[in-house]
Amino acid sequence: MLSNILNIQHETDEEGTIREINDKIPIRGNNTWMLICSAMLASIGLDTSSGAVIIGAMLISPLMSPILGVGLSVGINDREMLIDSIKNLALAAAAGLIVSTLYFSVTPLGEPTNELLARTTPTLLDVGVAFFGGVAGIVSISRADKSNAIPGVAIATALMPPLCTAGYGLAVGRYDFFFGGFYLFFINAVFISLATYMIVKYLHFHTKAYVDQAKQKRVAQAMVAVLVIVVLPSVYFLYNIYNDVKTKKQIEQLIITDFKERNNEIIKWELQPGDSLRYIKIYSVGKQVDENLVNYYDEVLAQNKLGKYKVKLVQLDVSPEEVQKIAYDITNNMTQDLLKTLELQKLQEQHTDSLRRRQNLEVNGSATSDLRMLFPEIQKVQVGDMVSTTNPAKPDTITLVMIDWREQQQPTVQETVAKAKPAAKKPVKPKLQAKQVQEYENRIKGYLSYKLQRDSVQVISTF
Image 1 (cartoon, rainbow, N blue to C red):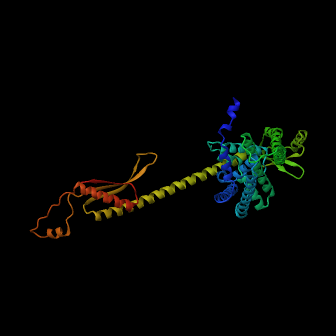
Image 2 (cartoon, helix red, strand yellow):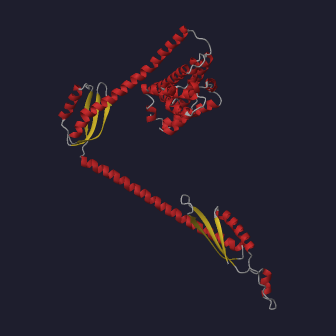
């Protein structure tokens, strides 16, 4: 039952897997451009502490294929693919280092952000991320029906950001950043390759050349030795992090909790390194603390195997009530500033609306005069804006034009002259026909759309 659930051999596309990985190993052409862009994006993301930009750099990075190629080539005993993979991986890593070093050499920021600091002390947990990410990657690629796991693997293993962290270390002369970042990149590369090798062996990919048992044993021993060497520093880092967390919990239980119970409010506390001792620096307000209490805490620390830590108290000369008042004043000032900002924005909007209405009136008035000149048959014209709420989610502004046409057309110049002759009789012009009104409306609509720069113009005629 369990073997059927975990079995992936029957869905394996061996030829397609080898072809897909082998084709993407070379770093040239578009892969070179993608590598440079990825390194630049990762550097910018690390410099500005932007997680979104860093994720984008992970997704477009072409570093995954040479790493998968190393594991695959060892698994199928393809010496030519192995050399090609290592060469291209080294080339890609060097290019990433150069681009990131150049960026951090000229950036006006260049401060060690949290994103940079997070990649300087890789631990055994990062080894687990790289290994299981590599398993997911090679299993995904080896399927006949390809899945979309590769983007997730690229984000999880994060190959380019640690490489750019190493570039930051080179640029600013911080070799702890260089070694920490490059070590994390090396861990990811080694354990993604290891995962690829193990899955290839599990899927029984055909080897390219015969390997005798003695040589296969030597290769396995060399791989184990390399893995142990690679993993040992991460175990050390994880052990240190575990000890720091454990120590902080002990200090909080032994010192901080007791200090709070003595009616003293702690603003903050921190561990401050020293030459031979480490200090627990406590910033507090409240009643004056007796020096004997500090000595008592030092004895408690020594009894709990924390003798290298000493309490250092910073007593602020303000009462808790004053602290609350300061906090209230700060909050109140921020609220007042926010209200002033909102009021200024409202006044600005009102001014803008007033200006817009005045401009609309001027434009509409000009349009009205133009219409009277172009169409003498118009007796009265009104132009205004109306908001349509047919779709509440997207209200639309419609320019409404109401035209009152004359019963008959205006007399021509000849008719005006004839009007002065006593024998002449004023001819009566026929009423405007519906077809002619329709034609005028279309012309007016086109003219106003151009004049007012509006898409929605509606013309209504009355007689």
